[in-house]
Every structure is written in structure tokens, then in C-alpha cells.
Image 1 (cartoon, rainbow, N blue to C red):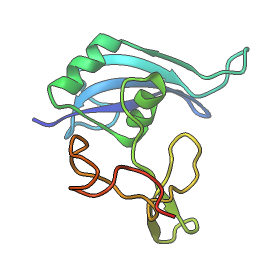
Image 2: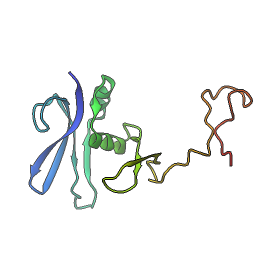
Image 3: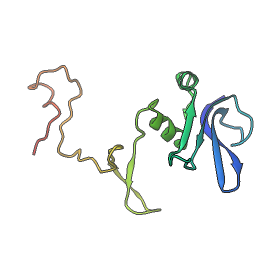
Image 4: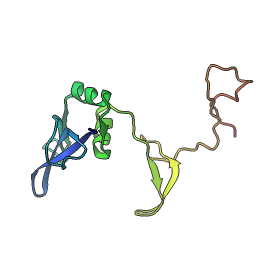
Length: 137
């Protein structure tokens, strides 16, 4: 059984409300679940912010036993500080082919990795396995 951490939609039309759930990957979106891990309200409240609540210990438990988060759940867990930033790829235009250039998740700008030399083992001296990570230009 493959466990996924994903969002289940609640609320009425035009007023969505989501629960973060651990569920079997074969069950429907709003169907049977194993555990409720939190909630996410995408509509801004009176203070203008989106509301989110998580059970951090239970989310970490499910991730430790191999649960795979869906893409929206992965973004929510990144914002909460549980997961590292997801890898992002730049798109040339909407619906078009993706560029294979990685994107910095904090700024959204493409990373310039052509001018960098990366060492496999950082404990080796500079003369042996290439230079340390630095600009070559």
C-alpha cells in the first residue's frame, strides 16, 4: 500500500477548504483516509493571510515511513518548513516545453550553473579532484 499525503477538498462552491490527509494512493480524493494531518484555507481571512494548521509530529512520522506528498501538499509542507524546497524548472511559455535549467526557489530566477565547478568530495585538497565551488569566469 502506497501512502500519499494529499489535500481533500471541503467547503462549498467558490469557498474551498482543504484538509491535509494521509491516504492510500488508490482511494479517491475525498474518500477514505488514514489520518487527518492538518488543514489549509486558501481564502484570505480578515487579516489578509491564508490560514494553515499542521500536526508536525504526525506529518514527520508519515514522511519517515515513506509517505509521498502530492505536489500541492509538498508546497504547503515547504512553506511550513518541514520539507526542503521542491525542484523547480523554468517554463518557456505556458503549456510549452520546460527548460531544463534549475530555478532558485527563493527568488524564482534561473540559476547559472555553467560557470561553477562542483567537487564530488569536499574533503579533498584543491589540487586533486578539481577546484572547490567557485566562479571560473
